[in-house]
Image (cartoon, rainbow, N blue to C red):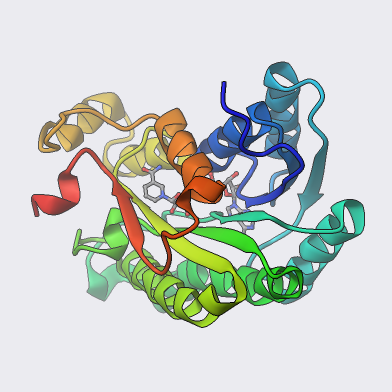
Length: 261
Ligand code: NAD
């Protein structure tokens, strides 16, 4: 087992489920001290329990907060710094899927809701965490974009706008903060079987959603969904010193899907 996170503090938004939880488990196994943020108190509790199983000695701070609310973001960063004194890794990951339909039907309120969590939330996280990392003179950020942030997928106006925006923020901040010893990168996951993807398949077909899932991934070059732990391992690598020179860019983890469109 590698030991890339001993003495390091890793802050994760959306830590109560899916990819955030998978990343938390990976870095905790390798010694990280964790601050986990989510709107779901129950999700945070379950992640903390799962971490305790794989890394009984790991320190875990859980913070209920909404990433789209500036006060909440200030608070989750302040509580993390108060407890640990620093932030070495930031997985800026919380997000929602939103409705799936044509642009004309998407709805302005839904557009604002999705962009507010998936893009504004990422910006607010960057704004507050990069200030801490700049004072330290070190740090690594991984933002969660999506294949929907680097390609046109369809039926996801809010999600597409937000995730393309996350890629833009990644390039912009990476270029600004490289000089301070900080790298900022993004991941672009394809379809990874998490509760979010399960919910979106249920939007497509509430009854036969598992069959809808099989059809959905039949066009993927690898003809399967990704696993959360595969993404967790990529995020751990990107947050580690091994990936220190990867900056202002997007790493796809999608079985090759984004090369095929
Ligand atoms: P998930 O639903 O399993 O987990 C997302 C977590 O974010 C949940 O615990 C949820 O409570 C939390 N969250 C939602 N809104 C929040 C808010 N306003 N403030 C704080 N926390 C909030 O989904 P996931 O699949 O793990 O998704 C994580 C990220 O990965 C998202 O940004 C998503 O867009 C992205 N992504 C997922 C996939 C996939 O296939 N699963 C593909 C591409 C991108």
